[in-house]
Image (tube, rainbow, N blue to C red; front, side, top):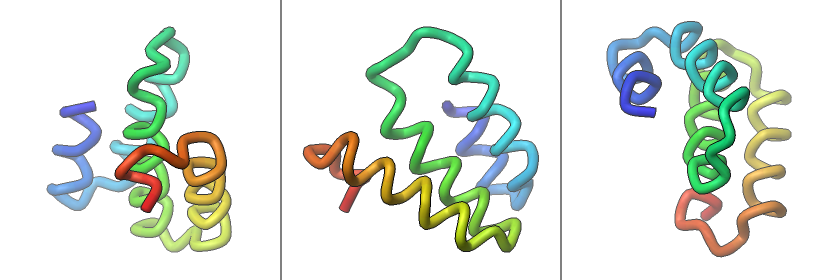
Length: 70
């Protein structure tokens, strides 16, 4: 996730999205909220607002206790 956050920070939304989506192939349930948050940010940067809202809704409903869901 550090690589995905770094990609976002440098303005590489496409790279961040690729990293996050690749990470989902690995079993890491504790990282799912962070993966969803980064994915939503990357989608917003790419201008995919509707898709980003869908990701944000998944984050809120699946992980309501996460600080990232707020």
